Amino acid sequence: MIKSLMLGVGVLGLAFALHAEQRIVEIWPAGKIPLLKETPPEKINDSKDDIVRLTNVSTPTLTIYPAPESAQPAPAVLVCPGGGYSILAWNHEGTEVAEWFNKQGFTAFVLKYRTPGQRDAAFCDAQRALRFIRANADEFKVNPAKLGIMGFSAGGHLTVRVSNNYAASLYEPVDSADKLSCRPDFSVPVYPAYLNQKGTFEMVDEFAISGQTPPTFIIAAEDDHSFVDCSIAYYIALKQAKVPAEMHLFPSGGHGFGMRKRGGSIDTWSDLLATWLQQHVLK
Image 1 (cartoon, rainbow, N blue to C red):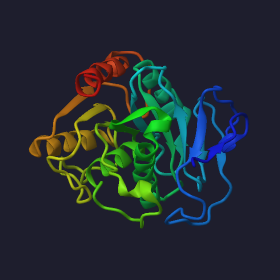
Image 2: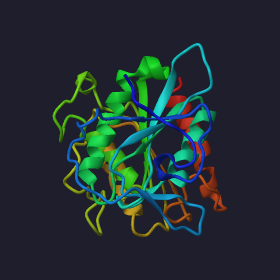
Image 3: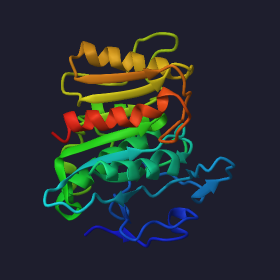
């Protein structure tokens, strides 16, 4: 049985309410969370820019944004907010993205993965989330063969890691869901971080990139000076592996723009993604 959490003010420690049709579910059975370590209580960091920065996550969950009712199971996407593996930009790169996917006909699952400084635990959480969604596809009314992953910055790194290292596991199976594949059917890293060897277009030796890496759509801005080379390096590696890949680099936009408008051509990136999804997922 899926364990659902109560919605409303205070859930997840977040000081805002969810829409009535949404719910939150835990992805691990009680007492079975791998790589668990003691963390302070979950909290939201102070903010002056309308970004909810969630940290000290110890219980991974999915916040579910169901697609509009349809006779057919909906395509689905796992959304991984960024935040340097320190915080989760929860609304900015999570819930706002989920709402956009709903408009495209997708059910979106926003992953609350473990922070801070828990890259391997986050990897386990993302793999488990994909398996969990597939195991419960009938209940969620989604198509398990059209389940992708999208992430921003550190969440983009997590997206790339899951998209390539799906055959590797850092945890022992905890139930029948873990017999299912955690390979996503499509992948959307947005200004991904931590992918390249510094000062080069060579990937770090972390990712098992192959012809089985899912079709990929990459977005970045050229003035994202710390991370734009990550996107270029990954695109080159995908082309070398003959993976269907599309990349859009915009002259300005910096880092961390999410779905919010900044002015200029960068504001069109979601329209380009919508077209790509139509061609590669919704066809």
